[in-house]
Length: 249
Ligand SMILES: O=C[C@H](O)[C@H](O)[C@H](O)COP(=O)(O)O
Image (cartoon, rainbow, N blue to C red; front, side, top):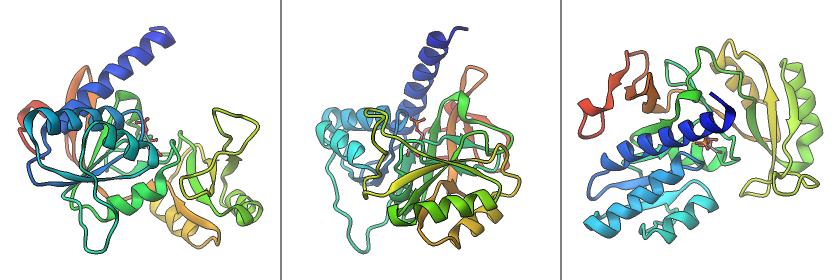
């Protein structure tokens, strides 16, 4: 398949997995809204259920972009405050392995995404078929970094075997990309991450790294297209067709 055809197929897959996740949201839920090109159709379809079915939910978004989209499609939004827990968060991923260990942050939203995922009872990942990998690391690992600390964080990442690249603003390549918090983003090429838990532990010891994009032990399930079928993955389990479930697996 040519590249435009592949992109078109992946876009269709994103719609399919987003539609499955949107069906599983129940009345009364407090929902975390992810960020990116797979979370966006989920937010749109959820808004459609709010408007057309009167689904009663409240939500908090993991980025300014998702917050704007959610408000535009009519989802009632909940401001961050103490005591709020999310029944369900639906978010995308840049890579996922069979244990549902994830790399996230390709869209720069990793910090808010990890905050909301950690405050959630159920993190459900929605992903097209390109995201499943045998081993994490092909996708460069994003880090959110305090600007002052950038040079020393780059040295420390290199010492861990990574090749860090400062992310530039896609819309204006003369500028550096900034997170919603005003921090910088580093994309760290490791090729293969043999021990994600150990790397996550080491990254946490480096001053100036606000958050890293390894999401370990957080996802309960993923909806993904495999062999042309919408499937549910759970950590360490065989894939099950999503059609077998009418609610969260
Ligand atoms: O910062 C962005 C997020 O982690 C996204 O969820 C991730 O990059 C996947 O995005 P997409 O669904 O566009 O591939």
